[in-house]
Amino acid sequence: EPARLRIAMVLSGIDVADFNFLLTALGLTRGNLSSHMDRLEKAGYVAIEKGYNGKIPRTEYRLTEGGRTALKGYWSTLDGIRSNPLNPNDTGRDANQAGSEDSVASPRVNEM
Image 1 (cartoon, rainbow, N blue to C red):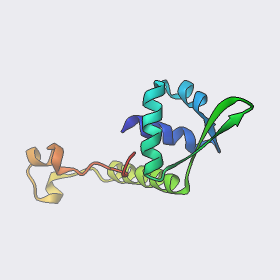
Image 2: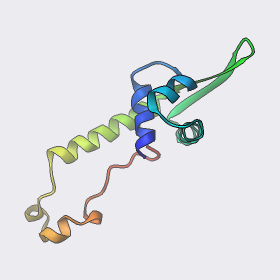
Image 3: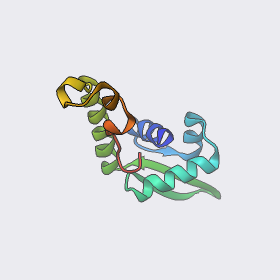
């Protein structure tokens, strides 16, 4: 999911971010951001801390160690694909089959 990947990328560069910062940085709606954060939290990639600044609600997010590991694995997978493009002569498949969508496993990191 591109939006979750963008969230992880933003959080990987900072210690903690609040909800409004992420809204502005990512250009998502409040509902979309909340939904993506819930999924990332359930996957163990993001930690959410809710509290108050006086009477004003505050929600902060940080990328967990598991999230950092998953993001690093995602980029490693993509680097491997870029450095070793599928060559139909190496796999024994014909060119049409090698170019098909299901002949190449897409890099997936659980919820990203």
